[in-house]
Length: 230
Figure 1 (tube, one colour):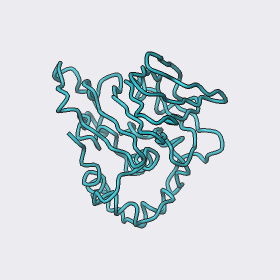
Figure 2 (cartoon, rainbow, N blue to C red; figure 1 turned 60 degrees about the horizontal axis):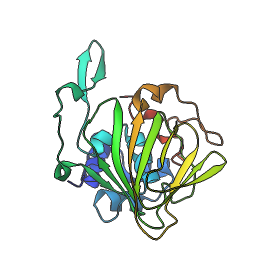
Figure 3 (cartoon, helix red, strand yellow; figure 1 turned 180 degrees about the vertical axis):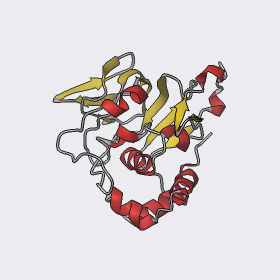
Figure 4 (tube, rainbow, N blue to C red; figure 1 turned 30 degrees about the horizontal axis):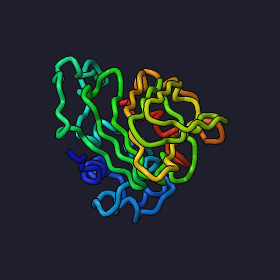
């Protein structure tokens, strides 16, 4: 079940009365790129997708068609998790899918809006979590298990080549980058715990400006800071 990324991103932009040009300027990309993503002519990279959802004030759940449930109590809306009533089983054919520009594929596993983000992640040969080669940081504790292929992890100043059966665990606020330098698809299962809870407290990444109104997002390093603030 491939997520209709472009349509949902466009709807979120129009709902806020934002022009293509203003969004492009804020993200430091071309208006043509945003237009092509919205019309489905091209898929965004991981970095571009994170930048878009952050600027538009929506979440990955919204993009994948599994929005959180907002409950209004007083002057502000409070987002409540809806996993207590979620189905216990999610069939493979029903997995929401995000296809990235450079050969990265996410399949959302069962447990939408739960305490962990569960993903089946694939990297095609030559694919990377950032086509700009920039290390990313985000809130949460990251766990992963490699099923097939070979995936290179750059974590801080260390580099690890992960093979089937290898697993990893680290605080996702540490700068990291994934890349497939092999000649076959690399695939694994990821779980990120506590991303929503830690989001507000996450420090600004080194070398980037604090996020604010009108501040362009130079990379995907800080884009998860505001994804779940709504």
